[in-house]
Image 1: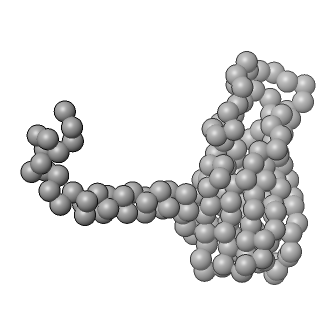
Image 2 (image 1 turned 30 degrees about the horizontal axis):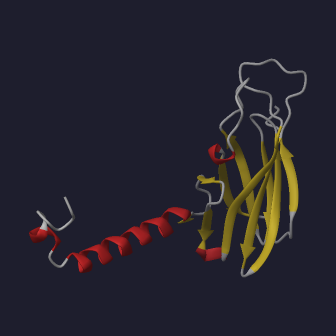
Length: 162
């Protein structure tokens, strides 16, 4: 049955309604890939997603996991390994790359334009015998004001050791 045959009453004026649906759908797609975050509040990004802190003119885009040699969960490893994660950061229109290296259960922080960007986790944890799909990675982050003044880019690995 052709569209409109038995549905002509529903489809009258359908072009206008369809444009609104597509327009609304377009907004949902834009909103999904570009979110906002606040200082001192944890947020998550999947690969390719961007988050913005408008007050500071900062945007962060999760670009890639360039290496993931973390020991799989429920496996005893001689070396714990680490993951190297790359973000694009734009501060007041100037682009730079932030590279973090975190061990299992650890975190890494970098200072940028008066802010400290901390990568608190990379999920999911590797599993023995399973290949990690690139699209499955999610980075957990927190951005805070740097109390020591402005530092261009510095890194400090926090292993969580006490």
